[in-house]
Length: 348
Ligand code: TXA
Ligand code: MG
Image (cartoon, rainbow, N blue to C red; front, side, top):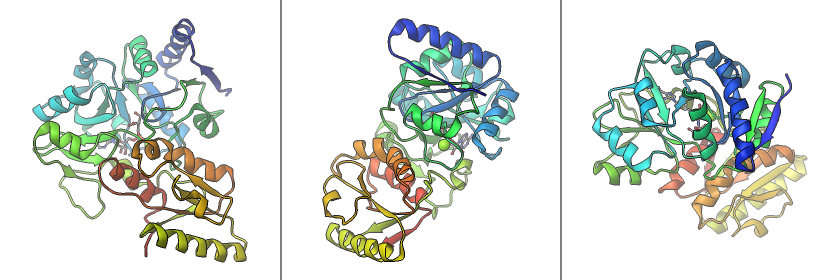
């Protein structure tokens, strides 16, 4: 299959391209599209066999459910039952935007979309290309991140092309994703809302809106009575390089990593460093990449997946990464980084 990449520039061209994309989707095929978080790989959420094509193209385990993307609250009625008060408050505050909510599903949503669950994950994205595409389709789009299963999520069309060229007919290129980390997932089907995946909408921001404490359901050590987002149990976000996070004061981390770099070079191992603007010049390697300014977590979130993919392109076998604060947006950054590192953290 030939994969066409359509760059979306002016609005006249946008309409034509979205028409074409909507036709492909209505025929039961797949289209990758930008959102404000990461690129999604879309299929008609009401079409059981179209959804199955997503799992094939990504190499995704079939028990890992997809997020259903809507472009109006009317569409929510077609996919979700029982929207409770907490859900309404979160929707009011953050939709359209980077928050996904879990609801009981309607019969219109096939089990191939929900990985066999009776619940469905729903998101109302903010990105204009995404919402205009869904409106043109007149059906919601089931869409996971548009990467091969296990790889870092794509934040540019070229990342999607690298992973899925030849496997899907069309990629809509809307430039770099504004946020760069996947949506915050909140399960509102229980008495207490539970965050199943942290994102750019932070736990603190949700608690402020709900005026109540929200449970972290994603920390490995915390047992909650609700199932975690099934996808979170799989290997994730991983570049080919083996990543280790080094935790300590700046001085200790730099000195430890420089020591490890010397050891690796003696052994002939190509190792790199995931650094920050503040520290990049302190490492004795030409394979140090800055993920952004430590003072600016938004910038780090936006660059994280792109940086992980860059280490692959440069052929790094091992990557030592600095560690980030777990507060606020840092919780989402560390969640993705820790998974990419397969939980290897060295505390100095
Ligand atoms: O920002 C995003 O959320 C992006 C863009 C494309 O919208 N999508 C995304 O999808 O990150 P994906 O498939 O990579 O991650 C979806 C996560 C998985 O961890 C999955 O297990 C969880 O959502 N999920 C989906 N349906 C669920 C459900 N009914 N209950 C619990 N978790 C669910
Ligand atoms: Mg994903």
